[in-house]
Image (cartoon, rainbow, N blue to C red; front, side, top):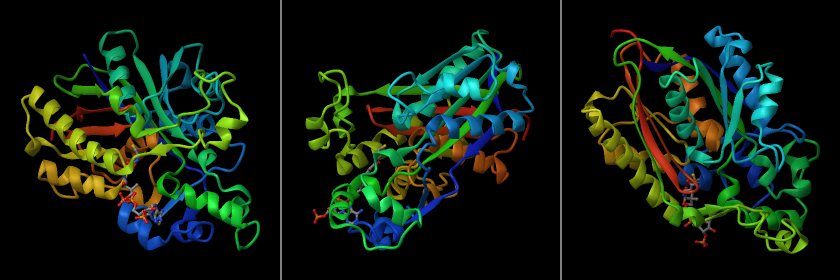
Length: 356
Ligand SMILES: CC(C)(COP(=O)(O)OP(=O)(O)OC[C@H]1O[C@@H](n2cnc3c(N)ncnc32)[C@H](O)[C@@H]1OP(=O)(O)O)[C@@H](O)C(=O)NCCC(=O)NCCS
């Protein structure tokens, strides 16, 4: 028995912030962001909208697409690094908002690798017979990290510039990571399937905790007593801290290696692939992945220009778009791959049910 994807859904906040909008509140430019990352715009949530809200909307759409009633879901897996509040996680909020039963639900904290881990866990639950229908949703509201102060009013069109010099300086200090990220959510419904050799046919999940400091939020945690205080905020310990160059190097090495490993384990090669749904962190990382695998842009598509890096939501958003565009046909072999903070990475292989 295998597990197959029977529905997908996406939810992104309607407000869009372009690179030029960011250039009005910090020292950056559309040219710098586009040429270094491929990002042209990102969606941003309004205050009061949490990852659980976007996740719930994406789950409702995915259930509708799958024609599955909320009461028929057995397990809900939510992946996020930007939960609505410190505790509890968002899975219970999403379960409640979507009208799911009193089912098992839990959060994953594997950042950009979270959705890949979620798919693998869902497959294991379905394959073992512990569940017959599992929903996996990735959702992020990164906007809460952005130290834009009163400049948010400019981004939200509530007033025109110029930005306050203190806010401008803080935004510029954060520009190395702040321009990369966007908000959004994507969900998939998975169910058991009896087809021979279809569904998830292999996976490789990896962790190297020695690289946890490549991208981390070092403060606001229980090694500190109290866990949050003015000194941490003063030291910017609640901001992401990122070694962009080394992350880049790790991502372009680890993702292709995982893809090759999972293919080899299933006695397949790169030539057998119909599509690679890869984590969307940077277009130049995707170029590196294509080069390492010896494939073209059509096989490893990108949508980062429109969303930025939505962390746990990038895989399901791209999956949903590729399904909608008719790029996923019966019999196709789809590979999912991601690399994220932790460091957690891997790849999984999915054979679309039905004959070619
Ligand atoms: C972040 C990233 C785009 C930076 O690109 P880069 O070419 O390595 O750029 P650098 O960090 O070396 O910075 C080069 C210069 O641009 C400046 N810069 C950084 N961000 C900038 C921005 N948004 N606008 C303008 N200039 C910027 C830097 O201050 C630096 O200036 P300096 O040379 O005067 O010190 C790239 O390293 C990357 O994408 N890494 C992976 C990040 C990632 O995947 N994160 C998510 C993890 S899953």
